Amino acid sequence: MKNTFIKTLLFTSMISLVACGGGESEDSNSGSKGSSDTTKIEPGTNQDITNSYDTKGIILDQNNQPIKNAKIAITLDNIEYSTRSNQSGQYTLKTPQEYVYPEYVSGVITAEGYKPAALILNYKNKLLLTNDNSNNPKLSVLQENDVIFFNGLTVIHLGNDSFGGSVNSKFQVKSSGVTWKDSFIYSADKKSKYNQICISMSAKGVQSSTSSDTIELSSKSGQKVVKSLVDSPTTGEYANAQYCLSLQNFQADEQIELKVASNDVYDADDFEIINIIGQYSHTSTGTGTGTGTGTGTGTGTGTGTGTGTGTGTGTGTGSTAGFTSFTGNFGQVLDLVTQNFSNTDMVSGACSVTRSGNTLTVKMPSKNVSISLTANEQHGDTAPINGVSTLSMFDSNQNLWQMTYQTVNGTIYKTGGILMGDKTYTCISSQ
Image 1 (cartoon, one colour):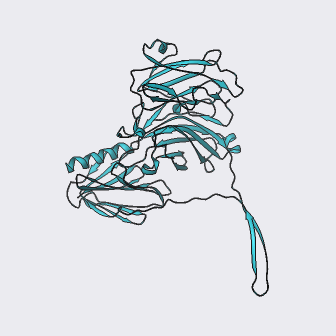
Image 2 (cartoon, helix red, strand yellow):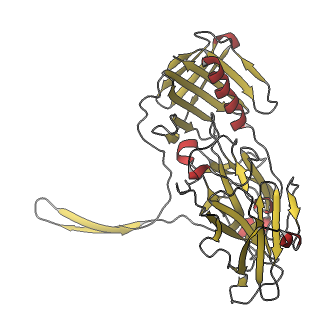
Image 3 (spheres, helix red, strand yellow):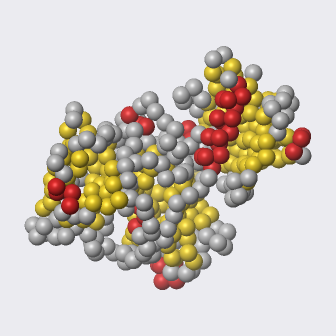
């Protein structure tokens, strides 16, 4: 039982750290749509479904004028069902009743020259209903500072398909891996006008507070900007989210990679995202000023007022009780690029994890491994989730260390791991 459980933990760890997926897109409405294994039911064909749910709506622009030939599409498992709006902007999208629907389902509405919009449906009491009137969107005309990520215009499930038990863990497609990637060119013209890009998306199932899910910009010149994803509603609904990421240190005409990742070292968080789009903007740092006067005899007192704005950074805090040093009985070193790994023997003292404040050290004597990481940004400090307590810490280079502990059938399992560069170093103890 113990050996099987330990190997399962290591296998889950390996899955959760392998990056996959991706493609390219350019500024505004140009780009590569990439390849897909999705079977597409072309407009018109899906009208012949015998037992269907009929989703109806009308597509308008911001002036309440109908948009014809807009595409309305939804992917269920690996099949895309779609239709087009008519001259009046009206449409009927048919999807099969026999599909096992999660409570919340998403699609996307696109039209040439307009920004895409998410279509959110709610399955309840054997009825497929529209949510928040998303079936009747008013599309905005594309602007020169808009960036469309074509690989993000269909539902994307990130994680390892290891989930269950709650409405927040029911999905409409299978996992495509633990990362989604796309890219854009930060042209010299854009750099002269904009110093950040705000990425928006609709998401459900994100539990970043316990699993350190992230959104990241990076380039070949070594620049990187990372933010944590915000948690989705615990009801399992979709919610819109926006992440503004600085472009200040990126070079002109540089290709910048956008990545969304399920980052948990030991068990990837499963969530779905759709309608990923960006918008360039410019932000400036404010300064503050203040004045004051004082009067008095003997001992003077004074008062003053001031106003100003600014920016700052901080680190997470919280109780870290329970995340303590331990000696383990199984260790592994995994190369994330080649997927080669090296295991210790399963014996007492095969590895050790030492924690001192924000520094974690993993040692495997038989493999001549002794690696330490000091981190300063806390992303996970939790009460047990499904019986597992997790603490995750990042350093400024986005290296990560993580500790977990849980009790299964009276046995306490502890794990400690470091993700540094292209390798992970993991130690597991069962007592």
